[in-house]
Image (cartoon, rainbow, N blue to C red; front, side, top):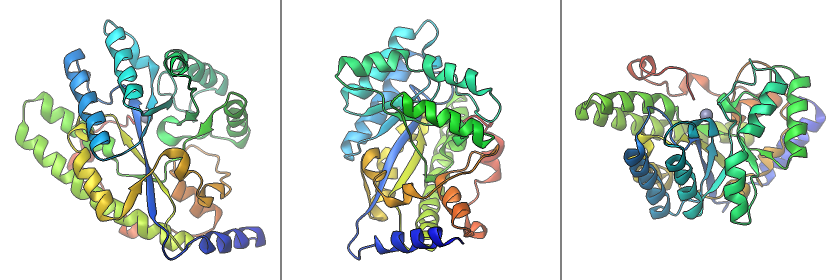
Length: 309
Ligand SMILES: [Zn+2]
């Protein structure tokens, strides 16, 4: 470990005051709706359930939009869903137009897709005197080479965007696909079972991240939780909130979580993988995360989910 990194670790541990409150920012990807197509009335209901759940639990969340989802005959209704998010006081960021992979897309095409992905959201925000501030990489892929990574991140900065990291994730998209499939079949028993399995998995995953964070940094960082705008989460906000409360994780806005010094740890990863930030920090600090205890998505759930975050 270099001297600079040792100093950084020492200073990160020092920030851990005994009474430090633990926190997590909730981010929600693939707006307006993740997963199987929902006709307007159902899409409206899922969005309402999500937003009412956030409000009930006093969450301020940031949603990440794929404007490619606005194409089609429901365009106006779908734009209406994004407006609902803003009316509810939530923030919206860019997640590219077509949910592209930076690992496999030439960077110029990728940038063009990000620009295409802001045309509606930017206007909706501007009408409220706000601007789009956050970008979340699909698949958390930040670039296959340092040259590509640096080029894109310079572009983001020049265009007023900050990268939204993710430092806690519960593979919700895999469970959401299984849940959607059960709902589409009218199989309420399976849907309930998938939801129970999802919540149990989330309980164990949150515990793992907290413990892995302590092992890595000597304290728990302000986490950024990555969820998706799915039917499953719309049906589960209260239970997810209860899990966070049981862990004494206070939900804070994304910009507050990002003030945690952990997010200043250098991350120079370049490669094909879409790693979340705990893994990136562990790489920089030459520290092994306790992967042997990392909860695994049950095989039956993983099998039913195509790789489509
Ligand atoms: Zn996504």
